[in-house]
Length: 342
Image (tube, rainbow, N blue to C red):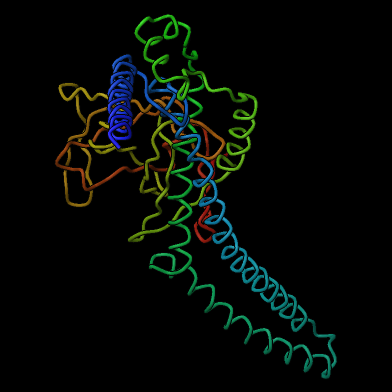
């Protein structure tokens, strides 16, 4: 009995000592700037982009599901517009036929009857088309589907670009960590349970997956939605940050609010000459800035002249117009909730 208790006590002391040694080893590795990811010790930057890369799986699933729902609703509307256009074409053909004096009374009667039938279809379809268009400003199923797609696309694009930036940098040389006596001792105490990077995976597979997602996310057009009578267009600023602009279908300055500028790290010289901007009844002083780039679908526009809103005009939000994109022509298909550059 006494021997059993001594054995148990010895085991307990050993476990406590091992745990303390493990904790000390972990502390050393963290002090050296390493973090644990699965069974590897990696630098903070590599662990971050690998987590972001792992997140691409569920983010892409959300994106593809949102796009499928959006495309289905757009497809229904497109089919409606196609039928409506065919009816309008038939009405125009019948109008020309009825202007033909060579028609027999029977032929004229048949064309007139057919025209009445098409007029009824036109009225019904016109009401459906108008309901669709007016519904784009409300919380209709189509608007909510568009917002869901824009948000899912933004999340996926931000993660995708972050991973691409990270793996584009020089890779970490883990040899210097392996040669550090404290790191070697700490890893030895952990008995190989957690090993030093790099991760033994295929860089080719990662690049292939990034290219696949890139081709799906950055297509020739992007989804938009409407709020309060304004088109909301979400673009990637400086290849990093998704920003939603209120898009104006006329010329006007490109504006960015102070909070967005701070997130992007774009500095504003508030002592520089300013421009007076009118927004409704408000008169605002805005300062010139240069946006490094704006990505719309598969097109990137660089060095955009813009203006910084002052902190007290934050509520105006980011604004873009048809001349924001320089030599590219803005192509807005508002009823299809689609925007592209040409």
